[in-house]
Image (cartoon, one colour):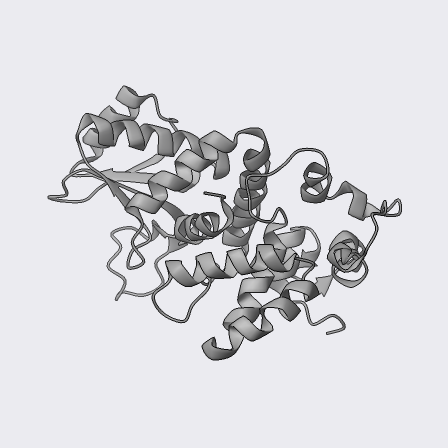
Length: 283
């Protein structure tokens, strides 16, 4: 109520800052984020300064950004998300005019903001600039970890991350939360590369591969040396391999066609992270 910051934003910044049981936000755990928003608009200053000895100094993304370059257009992922979310609320014909003002509010250089905005505008054919983030506490935990790991990989292993984004870009489809690989050797090689990086970003137990039979998935996992924790599934008469990130759900209605009471359904995290990385990763 004091800050106007939503619970999802709080959770993205620090998963321990928000207690869903008491509905309380521990602002001390958000100190670095709040300082960055209120007092650390470095793009507005004409000199370089060292931040005071606060939690802000311990922010992983900012510390790393000061020592090694990131592959990302702008290193602070959550500021990019906030920029796109705010611009998305603005009518399309006014976005370009308000871009500089919104960018400065979020501490993003105008040139970087313009590049981010242009990329987002080209990716989506409608008025969107960003997909809606998957909801639910568990999904938020997975999402925050994935984005933090992606950022670190953009510094430590930029070539691997760029390869992952390139594969996703070639196979993305806004109408589905999964991507598909064929059975040819080149496709299997891409599947192997994609899943190796994918399991670095998102724990293997959250991934699922489906084919025409579960045995076919077991065989390909063994052949490609994929993580044993990747879940398997069957999709009748399907040609190739379907990859997605899933979440555990419980059947609460007879109208639900799930065979068992507990089942796995697409979480949308792969789609959200994939499209965001397309916007963030330098060509």
